[in-house]
Length: 267
Image (cartoon, one colour):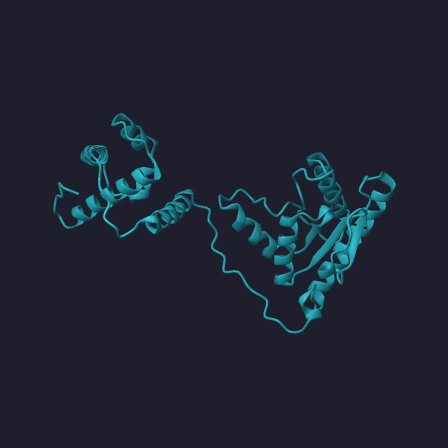
């Protein structure tokens, strides 16, 4: 569902709609559902886009509010329908039906959220949740959308949970390194005296840090330490992406030299 203001809809309006949906699902006595926005997680640290896709794939039922035809919502609805998993579409009475999803039954609620009509809508939504969930579990031929057009192979997601902070940082740094490498060219680049001076300071900073600290850890663990950033600040080094890329290479080379039992003084 939308959560941000758009057109004549306010953020408070969407919060109230979310509350109405949550209350409706809580009326289901047969099953105990946990109702939440697909962008939320259970405390795991991950990338929001990955979280949304995984929740769209894993949820037992998705209730999609297309009111206002929010592009993000419609995109997420498209993904859910591609997975061909139980989906209930709702909309307010001021939003027109969409041609592509018109064959799916829609539940309509009053845009002004008038109490009497909302109570009726909540009862309809609770019943739709029960019937949809039961049918999806008991009918092996159940299809929300794709089954109406033929036989298709539904995509599956290979999921690897990311619960370790250091692993997440490592993945992000690897991504940054790939982007930085993609910007490099084979053409010769003239190095200014300022660049030479900065690289000399970075080599000195890494050398001193290595002399007084254990470098058996992975490089990512070293450059993510606050003490190491403070160490760089003492040398007047700003931890930009380019600087950290160079420093990461220095540390990697230093570690490789330790493995070879050879001290490398010139990087």
